[in-house]
Image (tube, rainbow, N blue to C red; front, side, top):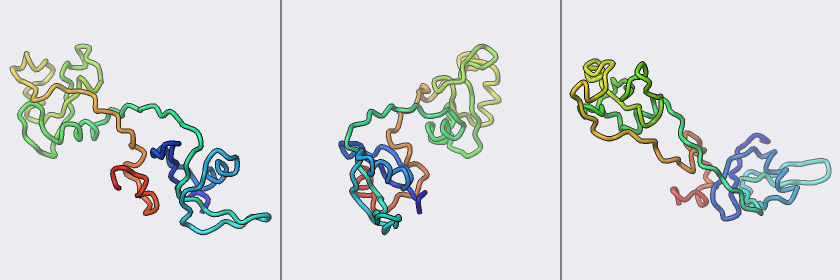
Length: 168
């Protein structure tokens, strides 16, 4: 029960984080947050009965830095919509290709990595697209940082839905 997830909202009701019930109770007890939704019953302590929070709101604003998305094969495939960036074929048999090959000093960054099907990757080999006579469908770029990345692949509680802008 103490490790159950609690939605933490910024002072302006913007979703900020997810913490444990234990951490939420500490924030409430120290006067740093207020309880908005208590949907899970109560905790009994030797001296008091405390409602188990589900959503809390901080009394002060917290500036949240935008975190760049990590460069991984799966993220590159999602950015390119599982489409070869040379021939345009959509398939699940894809590879990651460096536009400027690594052995020529090409960096391992969002701007130098694209999705390629196996035949196109073999055709391009260790050359640049210009040398191989190939064109990119789109110039690779870094995806925009998503402010609500903490909610990806996470179970959203029913009590949280009024506070999540994409679900309301």
